[in-house]
Image (cartoon, rainbow, N blue to C red; front, top):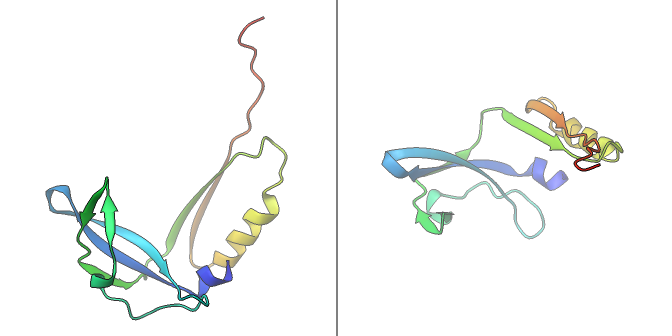
Length: 110
């Protein structure tokens, strides 16, 4: 987790069908987990549906993150600590939505 926070998040603009662009966020770290900050668009490869897409720009991300977590722990609460730590480390860097799935037994056949 510490490596993710220390890394530079790079927004790669990738051309898509009909000249629309998609932003792809990546984390770049070296073999020791140190951030790699000097990558160019030519150093990225992106495939979508098995087809290569050109990367037209690579730059550090500046917009706040938008994180949506969907948690299914069968109502045990077992993931609460991990989710809290994840959000705590990213506080101030984005907005969060947390949804839980609590499955209830449903009788289909008597």
